[in-house]
Length: 81
Image 1 (tube, rainbow, N blue to C red):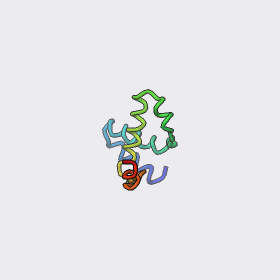
Image 2 (image 1 turned 90 degrees about the horizontal axis):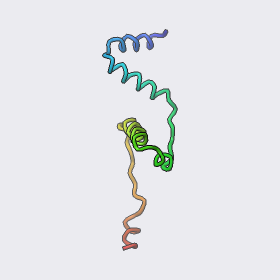
Image 3 (image 1 turned 60 degrees about the vertical axis):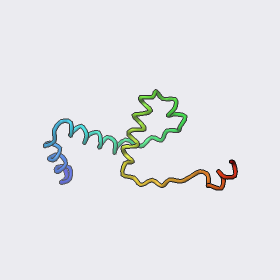
Image 4 (image 1 turned 45 degrees about the vertical axis):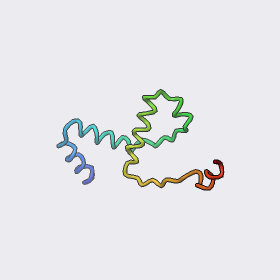
């Protein structure tokens, strides 16, 4: 076992059970391949399953910087009015 593994084990051993579970969940998340769902696949899932997947993805992206864009320009919208 290398030094990093030993340090991780030492730190984890001092955590409460709930905190250890959070660490385990995080490690499993790192080792699980990311699955990309289509909108159709998501809509066909039961609501509780779909919501859990979306919630997990949002939690992963909480620190990401997203760029927003508009599909239509103001000129396009003015032309349709």
